[in-house]
View (tube, rainbow, N blue to C red):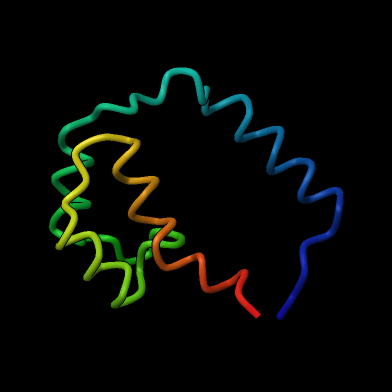
Length: 81
């Protein structure tokens, strides 16, 4: 796998910081939650495995708290011995 050079990473972060204002991202966007409830998450980090999709379809998160709980369910195993 080819790694990015540090200068390229800094340039990418600077570009994103100028384009995306995290304060303006709505946490209550119903269209997004409908997409998640359908498990239409190919390419979405931490939500694209079959298990993640199954959890999303079963829980059908309706707000950010439910989405957080949904993503936390399977990730607990990362911290178990």
